Length: 535
Image (cartoon, rainbow, N blue to C red; front, side, top):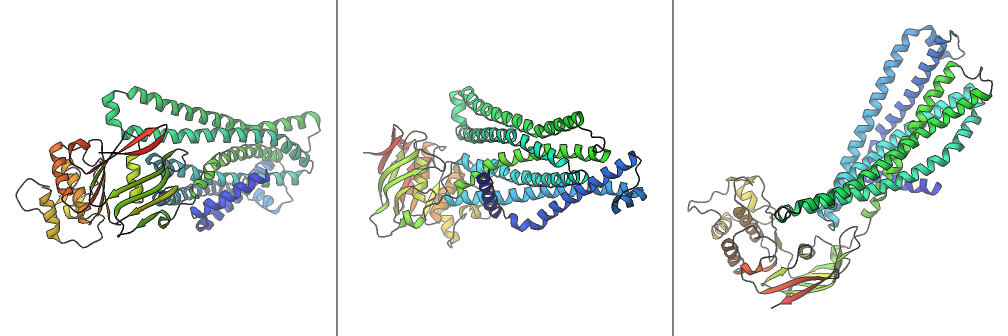
């Protein structure tokens, strides 16, 4: 138990730093203060109403006596109580939103920094994951407030009659075992739902990436079945978690009422069971249920906090595996490289060696999922290998993917997107004319507004190539960059590229559509990937 509390405390401290909770100390203290004020207001209301209903209009307490003599103040206290509850709950929710914003910022920065995330994992961690962790703080705040209420109500009951101490001891002993068992079950199922949610995210991403192929092959029904399987796993886990969480929230109420019934049945309680005792007891029973419910939420969401340990994994420094030597003979030299994605046990590459000559056009082919894009990412330095080294002859790397990146802006802004060097307009216009971006013979206006809606797919892809060349890219990485273009346009583009002093590394399925110097094929056998040179 103590060990679990220590782990919980460590996780809270860690995530609090990441989410900058420390900067919200005033808001947190405000919530605690309002929780205390609300409970004290509850006690005053219960005591005053009990005295009025019992026609006992005298009290040894100054505050109660004052309220009994000035009963018109009671509605003010009731209104103040509701205002305090509103401010407290609103404050907690706003705090949760700010924490979620900070966590999303941190996670997406980690995704960018570490790189070794699949698209689905990056989406999952920056979305669902951060939301769950933010919920943890809301649940923790609610739990602490309920604990405060429990302490105050219990103290009040003990103050009314010391004999109630024994009832609290008995109730506590009775509650420990079922609560511990139900919390353990809840963690088990929330862990399953976590895994299932991640599977759903990955499945959706895979479908989105291959939607055209799926529709053409008419395999939608199969994909629906796969998705529904993951969804069923998630729903079942969530259902079981809700079921046991609800039972756990009812256990304190059941226990308290049983003890109260035994008290009535076997003891003379005429002196103890006053209206105010009953009023506070019933309120305490309600709070006990809330304590267990919020505790269940805290324990469940802690499962997600524990996942933050994955983000604490050290990544190799770029200089340790990634080097640029302008004097080396080859453009790309990879030695003994091993790589796997974040949170995965399966290696994409194991002990990979690769050498690519300068100023040559090398195509890389292989089946879907063979790791062609991953290999390009390793060469570019956006993925980090477990072992091995990547040595390049230049740091000037260009990239053109299957989906061109076009921003809503001018033509000039698009072709200079991400470019850090000074480029003269003449150089821009020369390349635009060389690539025949527009068929018209009229003069090109660099300040013309362009977007995805005003350009054809071919024009957008040409802009991507022009952008890389204007950046003085000496190594150009192509990832199915011409797969959506006709053969004539492909050949035209590669005639231009092959005429430049540039190393081209081209991941493609359609290598037969154009000329190249070298052909490397990725083969998969028993989940082991090898690179084979084809002459």
